[in-house]
Length: 67
Image (cartoon, rainbow, N blue to C red; front, side, top):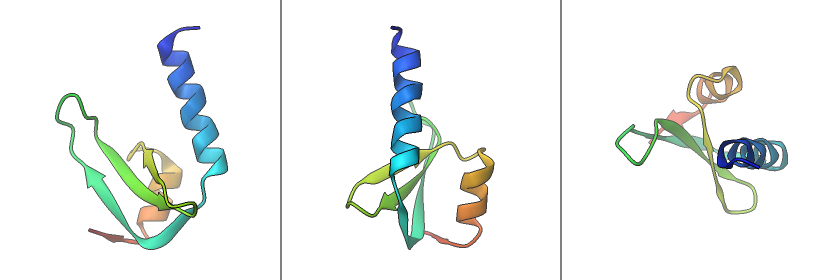
């Protein structure tokens, strides 16, 4: 299995199982090796990185405060 497929699978699993909590989010700039992302806090105390261009991310960030 390629690393790309594994990464996408893990991302989808984390999105499906992670509940975004709180009223804030953080934006990560694209500076190698980092990619542009929106980072949410999850209900289990973790963090969820998401594509800022995804519609569900845009919907969530419209109602939250950027920190």
